[in-house]
Length: 355
Ligand SMILES: Nc1ncnc2c1ncn2[C@@H]1O[C@H](COP(=O)(O)OP(=O)(O)OP(=O)(O)O)[C@@H](O)[C@H]1O
Ligand SMILES: [Mg+2]
Image (cartoon, rainbow, N blue to C red; front, side, top):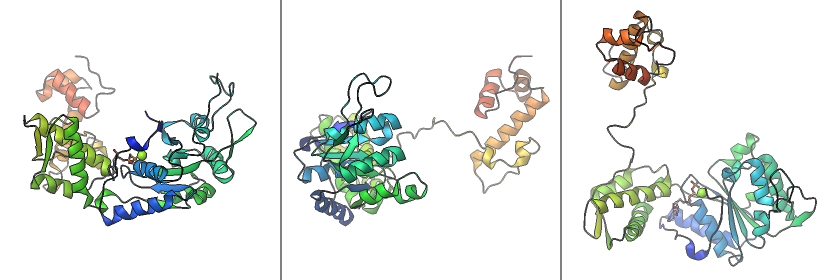
């Protein structure tokens, strides 16, 4: 799990996009880069918050200093506190050596706090103090330390809503919200889909040692354009890479062409089905009293499941909860009976011996 990284400008992947919405956020980020103020980047998962944050740093006057990132959601409250502010030797059990925190390491540079909403209100208070006065204390240390760090926070939550729930400090939000960049989801900038897809396709073909990526069929592109991309650019990247792999491995040609897009890697006739139907089950069925009337306007699978369940319950009740006898009366093998009971989560307290 990566919780801390030092990026350099050369290792940053390029930001791709040409839609008006995407270019507007790039422009906002570029203008904000040189302001020596905190910045908040908000956006759904996979919209490129991390890439944008790095861009801010490398476009700012701090570009030659350290760019330090911490994922606040990856650490427990105490660990996050000592990771951010450092600790003195002996500050807590296991703290054998002094640890320099990320604020100190990012001095003169930029600190990117990803998923900042995950920091506890107590840690938020300490963050606010650094933002306001450039001052903090290492855990277990009495001496105030100073640092000059530009803070960038990112989240996919509605922070104003978090404030209302008492989960985020209003004063920290005020401070961070000097400039707020809200990244548009991919579905709001569909013009970017073909160029992003082309870019990820080319990279993947290169990675697989192919010669050239020759593009997508009309049908494949249509699938890409019609999907709603809840996982945004990350989801698109994964779909393209997976489909390049499928095309490259089913074809010996060094030129890769994607004819068909498979969106869901879990799609399979053997995919385990959700077998619990209790929420939709009528009370009479739950109580094993009646079979529901077959209906042609309701799910076939759901109705068959209810039918199975009632049969299993009746047979088990009739045979004094003996799995073997119930199996015999239904014309099933013992193993088949156990399989069905398991599927309907009815196996729990039943008698499964042959008696
Ligand atoms: N405009 C873009 N051009 C090229 N690649 C992009 C772009 N936006 C995002 N990506 C890629 O999509 C993936 C997700 O981006 P990133 O990690 O920055 O998103 P995020 O908003 O931080 O997501 P999360 O909220 O899940 O942490 C990364 O592989 C990133 O390189
Ligand atoms: Mg992120």
